[in-house]
Each structure stands twice: as C-alpha cells, then as structure tokens.
Image (cartoon, rainbow, N blue to C red; front, top):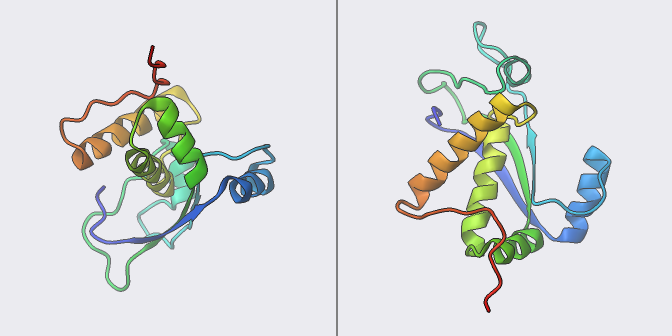
Length: 150
C-alpha cells in the first residue's frame, strides 16, 4: 500500500447498529456492509491532505518512506458481520474471505480511494482485487449471487 506502518480501528457490529450508523452518517435506511471514517492526518508541507487528494484524483498517493514518530492513524473501518455473512452466502464465498474483501475496501477508503466516478471506481476495484489476491493466491472471485443448487 506504500505505507511502512499505520494503524486503524476495526469495529465489527450487527445489522441493527450498522443501520443506525448508516442512517446517522448518510441518511440511508437499513444496514450496509462497510463504512469507513478516515482521519485527516497533518500532511507534510509538500503533500496534499487526504481530503485534497480525494477531491483531486480519487486516490491518495502515500508518502515515500517511513514517517518519524508513532504510526499514522488512518481512521476507522466498521463492518456489519450479519450483512457480511448474509452476502457471503448469496455470493457462495466463505464469510471470512468476504470480511477480508470489505476490510480491504474500507482501508482503501481510509487511504483516499473513492468510487464516485467511473475512473476512480475502476482504480479502487483493481486495487481491491490486487490486494485480495495477495491474501488468497490462485482463488477465483465472483461477486454475483451464487446459483441455487438444483
């Protein structure tokens, strides 16, 4: 990812808590699978803030080399375990692998990746699959609902 060290908070919750968080954060009804809350660290003088980077290219270019001092706090990723289990069953995936997929997706959001426009979405999607394939080499992935068994 280009970061030598960093930290984030991971919170696993149920659908009821996720629905409340989704409503309070985005005004949307019902639970979602993952929400990320990036923290805007103080950038180096020649480096854009994560917000500026997100507004510009859709992705944040991490700083080169390690930063002195404690790890950068990237933010928080919140995942609904109930939604993850339900969607894993729909897709025919082991739920732990889908949890990893959502965690990667959330981390990419913390790093400034977005999917608001087609180019940014393609970039984020490509990076997600690249990272997931590092965790599960040789695995083939399908995010279409699994066909019911006859």
